[in-house]
Amino acid sequence: MIQHGSRFKVVDNSGAKIAYCIKVSAGYKRRYAKIGDIITVSIKDLRLKRRAFSKVKKGEIYKAIVIRTKSKVKKFNGDFFSYFENSVVLLNKKKKFVGTRIFGAIPKILRYTKYLKLVSLSNGVNF
Image (tube, rainbow, N blue to C red; front, top):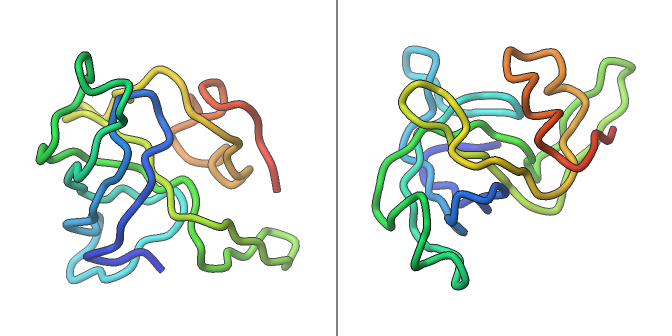
């Protein structure tokens, strides 16, 4: 379960490494987020090689879409799957992607959201 205070690995090439959840969006008093939900994050750490020409700066606030979670997610056929880490992809104010690539595969559930472009930016689709 993703909630206020959760830390994430940023899996795009925007230059951010670690993000911190500030708010779970889309709902009155909503407490938890799952795969495919939009959250508000603060950038806590940058990648070493990208610090000089990074698209983001430390401490900035961005929207992000949750890509992977440690908690179990139920598939359409009733099976469960989970990942080893919590991961996000950064979005700008117009809800366009900050990075141009996504590292690693994304879950098939994201094909059925309005962010179908994630599939073309990633390495592949699993589960």
